[in-house]
Image (tube, rainbow, N blue to C red; front, side, top):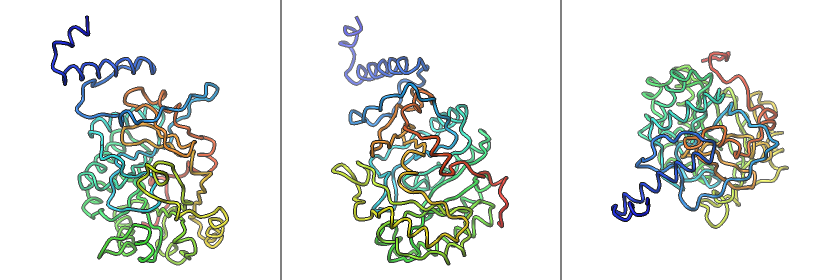
Length: 354
């Protein structure tokens, strides 16, 4: 009978009805979670090319999403050669849907949210991430709200409006040599990445935001000595990553980047760490520590499983709920704790020289 009714509907409307029915059936099959907003003008799934979610390990307990990294956009104004979350889509969730997902995560046990990209300050000139930061701190009362940015688009007016709600601002800086930054893909044309870093450091002091630096150690900066510059900037944490290969993102036929020329050996990475061992805020993360110890949400609010060297998405938490989706995240909660993933991350608990 349903097919007979569909025969008399315009093609576009018939497709919409079928899509809504498929969504309802999907939600029922994934845990009887009620389907909200069945007919929306945007799509949470990336289409027929979406990889199948990995099998659930029935003996494994469901992890708690204590700390979540939400990559709400893939768009970026830089072209870092080793980037492992590239601009494959331009999709960004509507603000209210993003807030709904964040509230679901808080209900499931989230204590820390980190907004990343892409470049988070590209969307609405920073207003989108600013409103999410304010919502998470003011409405959800999260202990820690942080952002990872390349820093090129942040203006002081953003700190004036949203700085009080932000615990940590992490700025990506892979080299203190501007020529190396250009080789990596962080060149700002007439602007200087390092000079901008110092300006952002001062704004963090002025507006009581904890300042952090993220560096990806790769073939172009592995011999660099950063001791003097890091000590002068005095971040609360200096997160040092070993360049990581993710198939389909920065390696392989369907990748937007070719990171193979950036890769360093474990021995190279250890030598870099040895050279900087006297920096107390240094937090090293090898490929082994990094790959499975982060809970990553993509722009559709799907958990990304990196255990097979790719990013295999779960269903969206907006469709199936947090518990059903997180089972397919590949998250190694023990490694998360072992690498120091939980630390003093609320600025209210930090002893800082603002």
